[in-house]
Image (cartoon, rainbow, N blue to C red; front, side, top):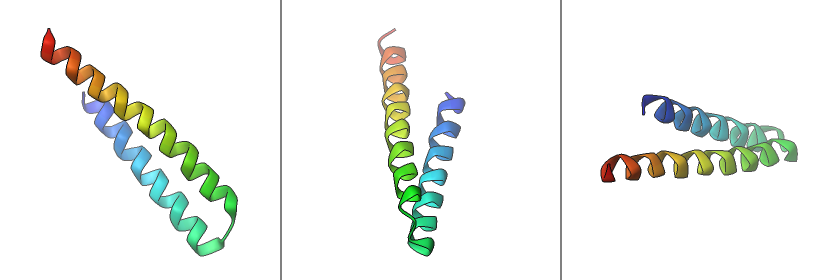
Length: 58
């Protein structure tokens, strides 16, 4: 479980960094990276909550 939390924290930090780089530079590739990372972070969050749900019922 701590691994998932660290993973989600790293995704959040990377998304914030990409968004900040987009704001300061105006380069759209940072925004695309932020979108991709958001999708991956969302998938990791769903996996995290699925594991929590499975642990609750077993």
